[in-house]
Length: 357
Image: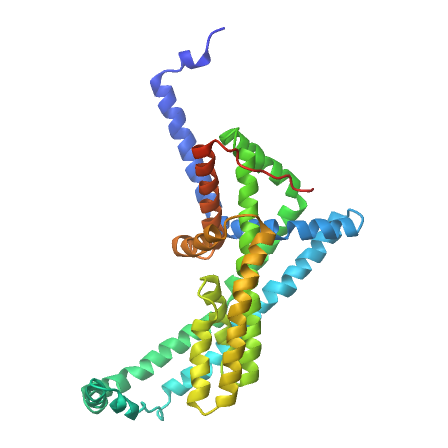
């Protein structure tokens, strides 16, 4: 039997390749606005898929009811708090802008600079010259313009219609994935099998494990620490505690822990002669650090039996390389690369697991 490839000349091969590349590029341009939203929807579905299956089993296998309950839980746990935090951020920032733009703003004298050995007096003299000379006048001149610009940006940030639209679109994609979860999973596994017959299915399983490990060990830990820190800040009377909570979430996601954000709050309490509350917040912060070192490894192990260092390095590196979605991309890339390398070096097959459907 004659091979069809023998009748294919070079020009036909080049044109076919160009056509395939053009179709692929055009498809990418069409889907580009939805790639990030669809990726976030996929991560949410991967993380919450076991919960949805348990709810479905509880209601006699009715997928529709399970999806409605799961989406309601997602709204209560994630979407509503995010909107609340953004609104709180705007509301607490506007008074600061008005204070900054008012005419009664005065720069601090910083007399304590003189008490610093060797260099303190020089810094104090330079600071006074800056305030008394052209530098101070320049600061006072540009201050109103900076304030107006900042206020304009904050007011525009309050109109987060696009943010709400993207959230709704993400929820819509999540519903579609929940409803067709088995079909999508089988298609992805078939594609991975075509790419690598030996490791395809195992790589898909590893990716799912990595995403769930990040969700349980990194994000859940960060949220719990931020909530507990916010309770302590609120009780201690620290102003703008909701903003501090947001910073704590970012700090914990970056694996820095809550201390870099809580220490300035503790210093502020001592500085304003709230020694008792400062000491209480210091003790509370120490307990949170101990909780972080216990809870995060435990939750990662519960999510997946994967190297903890790979997960943590993947989170930080993924954030730097890919932005927020890199929280999940980074660990997946590192874990899959690590397991492929071990498999190649020692001839050990990549372990796989079968998810319950």
